[in-house]
Image 1 (cartoon, protein in one colour):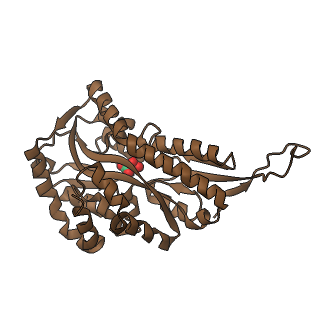
Image 2 (cartoon, protein in one colour):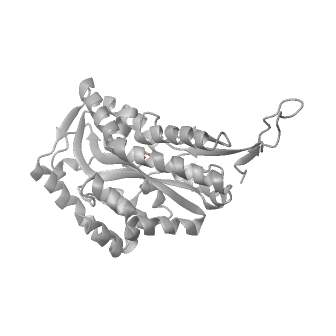
Image 3 (spheres, protein in one colour):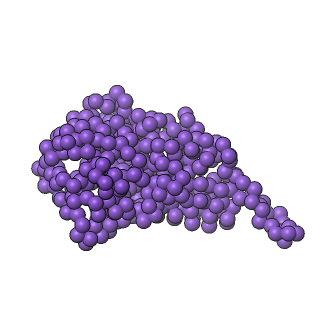
Length: 328
Ligand code: LMR
């Protein structure tokens, strides 16, 4: 790869006064696909500020939001090749390398945000999934929350039968495809950056995403309905290149980890707030109707969609699925 460390001279003609300080600046490129006013976008900026501060400028974090550098389908290879040093793709993206990660895509597998946290912190779930990454020169540094996904469309979707024939965008994940096939919809994998225009042009009818992803992309402006289904979870694995990370000077690594831990705590405490505030904005815009499901209506979704669990016991591992269910 091209290497993340670049010689950057801080001296101007005649050299540094004082001398002695290393002039080697470590550049860390951080690629992600969402907008800056999302939980992940804000976290990336916060991490940049803290990391640069704690390392006294030894490190420069260059954040590239909005798929400026890589789409999700290419970003892990880019990390492996050290073309970028940090990425925070949704767990669904990791399923291409490790199908076990589709655990996080299973509809209704987690009770609530606390359940997701418990899964991420559990050695049998989060621990196991993170350890796998190291086989492929990747290192998982943190899990960042976004939140539960809602269902958006130009058709009012309340009962499972309403899904019939709906062309719905999904992230690239077999579980997400199976989830929508289970209710008769037509799942369409597509890169995040292409979703808004596909909705606008009617290439797809709708999709599933968190409110912050819908709002920041203005999807609600081209969608008549959002059903508050909370059917699946969207969170992120913050991933670096193991060789790069292990090759950092120890003090730098310690400070970066500290910056990351503080950022992770912030995301945990604020992702729901960001989503809730943006839901209020969507409501205020009057551009789309928000549909709340009754207990019975939601249960009908659970019954229709969770039938896919058994189909994925082999790929994900029954032990992982059982460990997640045990957290309820
Ligand atoms: C999506 O593709 O819908 C999301 O994974 C985007 C993101 O990173 O939140």
